[in-house]
Length: 330
Image (tube, rainbow, N blue to C red; front, side):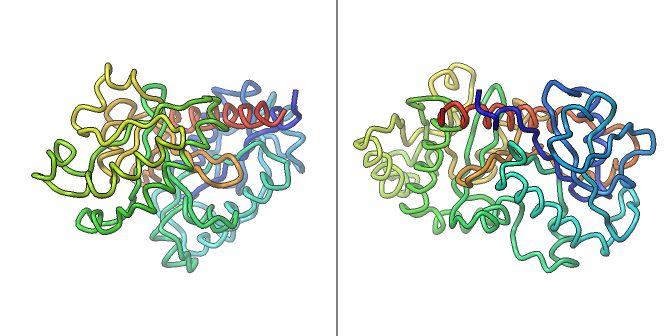
């Protein structure tokens, strides 16, 4: 077996004023040694009753996990106040993400799972120049384009355009952008999910996929020709499909991944089907990255009621993807 399969996942702390520290402790309690991971952050930010095992090196994770949450310490300037982000800690949040990526790139971790951050806090107090994790991770890995996938046992879905106003979607939906997204998704389904010939279903932009041009032309002028071109190259693509009939149970049986044209077209179905279990996956970067599909939840931070299910699923999926990559390389 490839040694990489046995490496731990690194879980970043996220914003320490959010629920990241709490769900990390709960994830260890659920997973312990079954899916080894270590937490990268300031141990002072963890809930007071957390059992921790300080480590100096990721190789110590498996042994340490028997006794407590393995923690690779990264000291922050300030203590955490649940629900109230500390501006002085913003740069350290960014440093932790960069350090986690370096650990994966150096072969010391199987993948990175990122806890939620507050983009506004980082923009305001750390000169953060990215819309979110996905774009920052792409910059750290030196790739021009990365893709966001939301995944659960019921559905994998990818939005072609993400955090832009709905009014800007038609102009942002170019042939080049759609083709690049489809190529990245296809390659990842083969490499990271072990599906030799992935079935890809592509939603139309407009109601009824444009109704032959009566309800919009983008489906016929952009989506259909791009998908036809890639289908001719051997990809198993069905498109464009009316989005309102793509996500019921029988329809989901016909594809391995769905491609949506904009943010809510993708996120509404998966959050309806798997609100607590959805996982955010970054495709197109040269390492495994997952994340729970929720935010910092400042409003419930420190109350002990945060649900760790999504981060548990994200850690598990990171291991599964790393296993698939190792198998493909063997």
